Length: 397
Image (cartoon, helix red, strand yellow):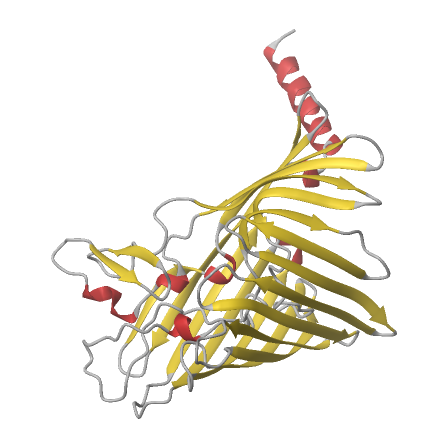
């Protein structure tokens, strides 16, 4: 066989293979024991601008609303009723938006300054050229778990992963979540400035210490049980490493042209300040695209501590429009209020506005979000308002 004939045969075989293998299966691998492995992830990068009332700065960031990550999922079937699975998910947020500070450009002299933020409970490096080097310097674990699932009896998971209450404050049916998060700002490490403060003087209290959406116990090492769905209802519970426990109830359904979702959770907290935390959230969307969501949550202060229970709520109105064939264009505006977060008399409010353009065939979102926040407390101190803008893209693979 001559070279020309060999090349023709190779091209024909490659074309046949390309037609025979669907693109959707490109991320799935099967091994010898019958289990399959799926690889996926996302990159979420943005430009962020913050004006803290006295100074301003901007940076290229990784949007902490849904940070850059990749995952490896394993699945297998024991029989028609029983399946098993694993999840390994890690993130790497170079220049994480939640770690950005307006004074990051103060790093000078070619050295690296390590700034510890007690409110955010993490340490980051701010490099000498300003807006690079904050955020993570290594991979962070999100999920490392195994599970066994039965169609009739439910699912049991063990390891690092979402607790039963994780996400129960974030029930939503709108498509603008990348820009309008609902209860948490994207500038959480930025310091709250007092009126009249010198431009190069920064306090130690961060905006993130005054805001929360009371969203359960997050991700942790736990044993978790999820029930099957009964008429749209499901129940989940976790026993969390360290002593905390949680339980959650969720619902999803449709009434005529209106889709509805709801969730509620209760967490027993293993710390010396709070006994427990609870939250309830709900969302509805009309088939026209008009939607609404909201949540209310609180923490119970331990008996003997003479202070009020922190509490807060969110209300978000949205519209998912079909303005173009490339995908949904989503608009949303939200209002958030949190009281007594760290001391009696604390009050923090913020508005959030956003628009997200979905490119459905490319797994891509283009977004712009704006946060405007205010803070007050029981003292006579007056605080500056803060403005934040974020614009970027999340691309899933």
